[in-house]
Amino acid sequence: MSSVLLRSRLTNLISKRNRRLLSSDVASNPPKEPLIAAQALASDQPPPPGTPESSNASTSKSLSFLKYSLIAAITGATAATGYVSYAYSVGEIEEKTKSLRAAPLRNNLPDDASSIDKFKNLLYTSAMTVPAKASELYLDARKMIEEQVQGYTEPYAEKLLPDLHPMEQHVFTLVLDLQETLLYSYWTREKGWQTIKRPGVDAFLEHLAQYFEIVVFSDYSNMYVDPVMERLDTKHCVRYRLGKAATKYQNGTHYRDLSKLNRDPGKVIYLSAHARENSLQPENGAVIKPFKLENDDTALLDFIPFLEFVARNPPADIRKVLASYEGHDIPEEFIRRSKEHRRRMQEQKQQGRLWRR
Image 1 (cartoon, rainbow, N blue to C red):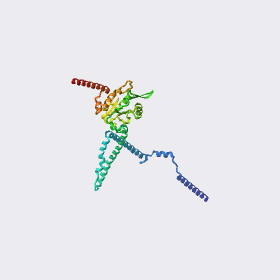
Image 2: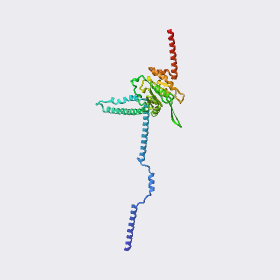
Image 3: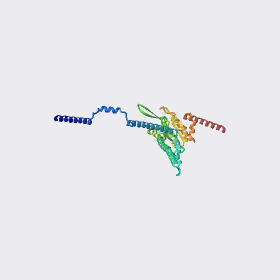
Image 4: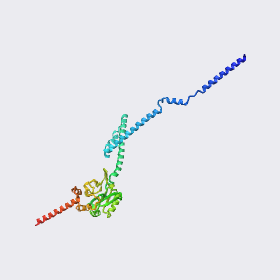
């Protein structure tokens, strides 16, 4: 009997112990969920408020607005600067900005002014100082740019020739063009550039150098003019050579500005085949027939009598004389007038003889 009871108690103790061990294992080692299922649950959840995605979107919108605002501001400033540069000169802009520069000086408040007045004055001064400084920067930049541009469009000096000797103040200046006046240059594929001097150019220069101060004025570079004139003018009849750097570039054309020669404009003759087109003083121009490689060309020699007569009988203003030849070929008209003058002189002599009788 006692053995049976003892066996039943041992059986109960063992079963209770086993139940405790099983319950502790389950609590300490819970069943694990698959990893894929956890990722799927996380991806299905909506993003919480204030996540980086929403902040990035707002930042992108702000940067986009700032970018377009800057583009609009730069475009407007560029358009305004272009209009002001086109519509106004530097002097006009300086005159208009005087009020901006003087505005801060006109608003000096007394020491006993109220704080509100001082604050308003500070705001007004700042608002007027910024555009004044901007206008000063614009004027400085524009002056610098215009100086650079003038280096290419204006003659390199205000006086292209030195002063005449006091003993030569009565001497006239004969300005000669180069292309189609003294020579003709052309290019061929076989021979390249060819320069042909006009018939009679040697005699023309040598003879008129006795009466005139001769100047060659070309729109070619001096790198071309100087070597050509060394071969053309072997006796150095031409005193001065002026090239492209001495011309005024305007509307796509290099003009000869005779007012920069430092000579009396009433004593300057510009002889050129294009005297009306490439000179800013066409009233000083004497048009010669353009040279186109004619072997029998005598235009330079034909001009000698007229030019010699002007030098021997200098008029007060050569421009009035040239104006009287407007629309005529000067050598032919001069010969006609000379014959007419001789005819009248002979008639007067004959009338004088009749009166004496």
